[in-house]
Amino acid sequence: MEPDETDTNRGQGISTLFVEDFSWGRNFSDYIGAGYLPPALEERLAPMDLIQQLFELRKEMKAKIRYESGRLTIRRPGKGKGMNKPVTYASNIWNRGYANCAGLCIVFVAALTRLGVPYCIVSARSCKEGLPKHAIVQVGFPELTDIKAVNGRAKLLWGEYYGRFAEVRRDPETQEPRWVRLFRGLKFTRSSKGSAAAQHKGPGRWLWLDPQVKIGYYLHLIEDGYIVQDRNRFSFAVTPEIKAWSGGG
Image 1 (cartoon, one colour):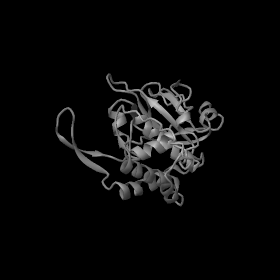
Image 2 (cartoon, rainbow, N blue to C red):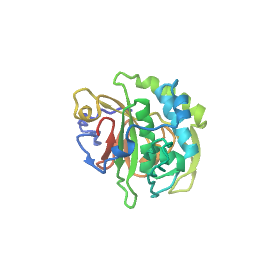
Image 3 (tube, rainbow, N blue to C red):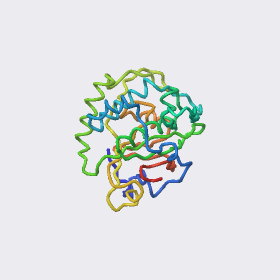
Image 4 (spheres, rainbow, N blue to C red):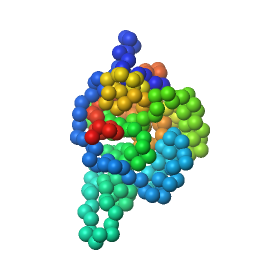
């Protein structure tokens, strides 16, 4: 699934525009800085390909950082003893072990920054009433990436890291049990060279992911109204806010 972010939709009833249809929110760039990864994790990620790095990073985050809705993470001041390494927003979260939605995205892209991987943080709004804004990450892959091969690799990694590809859940309306597919392939958008999207984020293929959940899982974003899905096309349900992107300052 890979709509082009410059695609004008050709009457299919669902917008895939991104940069041409967005608003600016509070800038997260100062929280990301030069990036951060725990040294042992950075060493473990080094020999892996990018898609496996994402699976391994999310695995480590889930093990070390719990999600707490609405809880603030405050940067700790240095103790003035001259022996402390600089404390960053991301390193503080790793040390304290909790973060809200935005904090998890900052930790994730701080790791991508250390790995030299392009990123974009987007705050999405739901088309359903009563749901808060939700931050997700877009991870940049080179423009010539073989998306089919990456999807195949991700399917193998899903089986290795998560096991089941489907599970039984109750229908929210009928309460009848049904099989639900958990992995349906990765969602990519494309910023073509010379497009308005590429002027901001750079050209490439952008993988959508939510650091709160498994890599390649999107059902919650669709059910909660953050993403609109129409066959093989998808988009944000409501104009998103850009929070930060690599090189964006």
